[in-house]
Length: 158
Image 1 (spheres, helix red, strand yellow):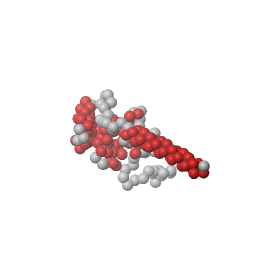
Image 2: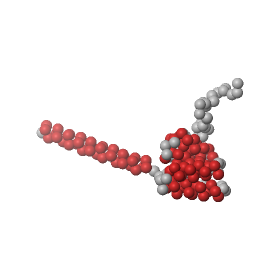
Image 3: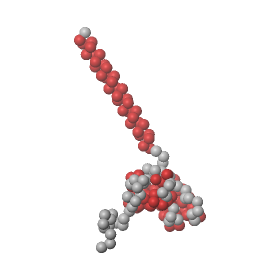
Image 4: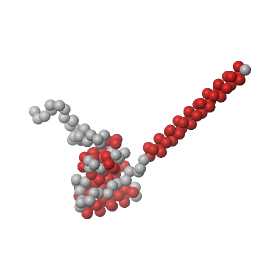
């Protein structure tokens, strides 16, 4: 009887471990699919911007979707110059910069996009923006020129 009880315990433990392993695999698979999210795509500009900026954005979007990221960057850069107060224009430019590996300039453009479009959930909730700071506190993430630091308490003019 003793051997039979030991065998039953081992079988129960193996069954428990198998179920536990299956649960972990299922959780891992779900996490992988969830992390993919939506692909990052350029945004259309808001109404009221110059037609030239809209045209440049459309050309940039076509280049971006064709994976011609240098061309997309150039079009989006021109769109930003034509519509400097457009959050989506800065966001699109940042997407192209990010893909090309210019992370610092992309960070600046993502933050500018968030600052210019305070109510735009697409920009603020974008996974492209999240590595660059918490968009819920844009003042905290304010950029300062290279070589300078964020002012502290009492660090006014001397």
